[in-house]
Image 1 (cartoon, helix red, strand yellow):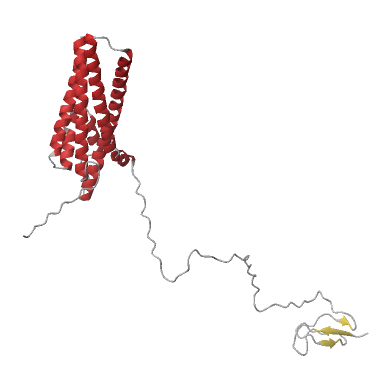
Image 2 (cartoon, rainbow, N blue to C red):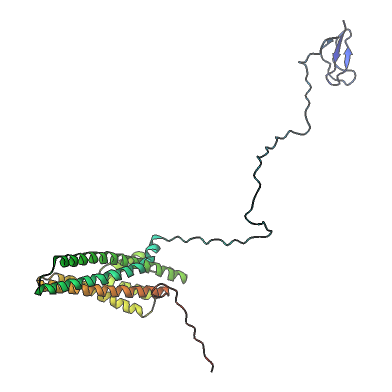
Length: 294
């Protein structure tokens, strides 16, 4: 039985002679082990692997079909200049409180006038009681109106004063910022000077004079000082004993409420003047004068 050897390079079969050969006489390749003629070449010696010259690429996944697009209007060529909505400016708590100053002043004015009317009504009840008895309902209404309106006017008035201090701080900061400067007075100086008793008779007028030179500031300053003197006078009068002194104390309290209401009105006028607005907060209309040629 004959044997042959297969070249590992060119695949040529060579008959085995007396001894197995090592190199192929055709391509000088390595000869494999002798194989018996009629048998199969061992598969463990070599294996043919076919490789594609182009690397395989992963297939793209096809997306599911989408519905047919629709438009609300006919598509057109060109650029659309859609106006942008300006961002809403955010306010700090200080600016928010300052913006409430005009409304709080109006509310304080209304409550102070109502409290003054309640005090005058109570004084009328006291005068009526000198000659005749008053009904319990009339007395209850007088006491309730005087108590409720007095408390409300004090609370709203205190909030209005606090809001006005915040407004003064914001207005001064904006005025100096418009001039490219910083407010030379620190915030605590404005707060202490505006709220500390005795000191608040002088410093608020100074702060406002630095803000505007309008003559209305002097009128406000006068009303502010008179208001505090009236308040102190009423408190001292309330310390007196006697029915007649207490009755006059009711009358003086109503007068003090009216003075405080007037001070609140002048304060509102000062704020509107600094803002260059009308009393209702509207923009001022500039009157243009023209020369008429006849």
